Length: 489
Image 1 (cartoon, rainbow, N blue to C red):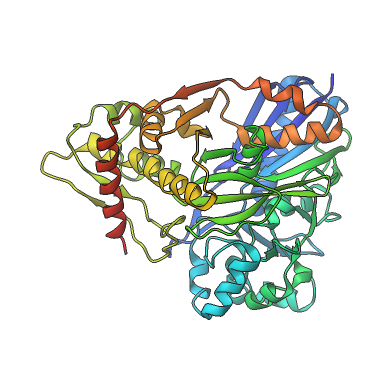
Image 2: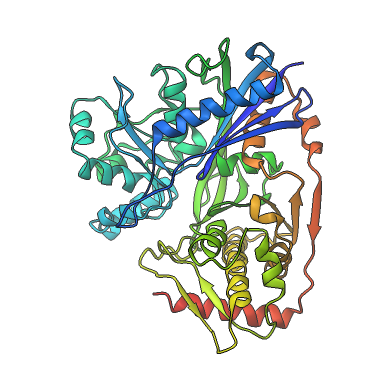
């Protein structure tokens, strides 16, 4: 039997997933990495730690299952997307810690653009100017890291997302590549010409030669033995940004398919087919993937704090002993309480794009307590997702019928029911959490000829939540949310 490995390099850690010849997930190992937070609130990751963890997770996975690399057909990679690394092309040494997608330090260098330049950026890349995306993070690195500036001047700097960093390390510096899904999220990639845009790169001061080669998502990227951790080299035959991997793993391959990934933050994607479509309601246009030389576009909305709100409630406020306890606490909250939490800890993402917004809790009275604040934390996740779903319907003109979801917070039954109520949609929760890594492994397996596309998507089974809240109650609660959002800026 030939196995396929899915590597899911995410915000909190790295997962290695093992799939059998029928595309069934049979084993998983995890390795967390540090969240490096500066006194100024900058959020960073150590790229070398992440690569070492990736190697260790795969090595341990195979050892625990008694499998050698000879039984592995290949590897698929999904990765946290906008997190940006910079390293010396010749030595492979990072010039600084990677700037995490959540980090808003790029706002410091985003204020010098004219309205005409902002329009050009949005028109060409599908993305409104925002510190969320790698372009401003790369500009910040070049302006604040002297070593990066020196290497850029000598043509020796590499700037890339975490997939590029992993591929570079896996091949000992021989491969510096990315796929179309990750490239489309940099705010430097022209979605019309399907190439790095020299004019936009110039606006951010990013040398085009410092960026990776862009390949089809189902390309043969590399052969790797992970620095000797494997007893022979295996092919990396698929790369997708994590949210794109989840879209593929959910089977949203046709126009109109929608999924929401609940992770540290959240990404909502709607497949819009083979043609570019600009958003006029606060979303971005990206590429879902490119396969066999043909691209698929998506509308997407990104939220900075969703699952991270649960972590904040637990670790910062001490209101819950575990993420799972938040469900019980929310169900015990007073039904008449009208507390709202807007988690604008680093501004608001889609569809508002207000980097200056600040978090708030409002609507409390003397009886508000632990249960009510925890419930408000869960509610804000569903409200934010509903904001994006409404924008998708407005942009596309399509009335959504169902929402496929994935990620750890989908195990919270209170949250999923409230999500169904607020969005007025059926919410489908699969029996697996690892949709990003599953999608990457499916793509690799199909590309390698191990799996048949028509056969593998029946492996997932779903629980469906249906709306049960009265329409007037939904409207009252959602209007209260919109008023709370207005108070943040």
